[in-house]
Image 1: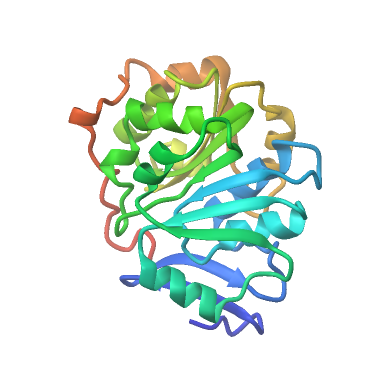
Image 2: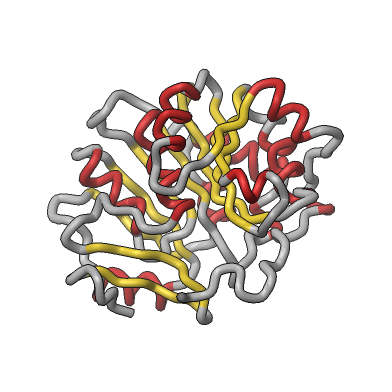
Length: 263
């Protein structure tokens, strides 16, 4: 769907729900709140402009690969998307920025990373949805271990995770990633964290320190301000949540009607 306010901008919907937003004239423009927060995290994982090897699980409109291509020229990126028709439509209708080194793969996200080489990515971005829910097989300790194996020593894992109070899914995902990664950071809109509404949270997991001060400055000054939780506060939020085993894994919760509607 074209955006009437921006000449070459497009909204991609899947089954009626907003999925991605792309401005062909300004690929670094991020419309959705969760995408902006992922963008902030991508900005602080390395010095500005330094190229990275980035693996994206979930393609959508290729919004974040476009962002990385223009903010970190020379980056090598792989995109894994299970929906061949969606991927072909996006590549045909919404061309990537000139010079973008982005390779697309039609595959299941977990199967692809299980076959990927060790230490092959600087950043892994997980933004995979089956309909409006994160698939169960991308929520377990076994999956998290594969993600950790694919990342290099200083690598960073980023995920878009939807939930609402009492945050059983989100807390379990933090506990699960905590079995693999030493550092955990959560970025979310204050109203979501207070339990006022269903929404997306961005999880940052790393083998090494995360520049939480820089991340907090960026998210607080954004048009859609967010809180950055880490350390003791985040451990308190996780509470007694237990890591998820494959045999116990479930998808993220179904969004309530109208949670992500258009207009």
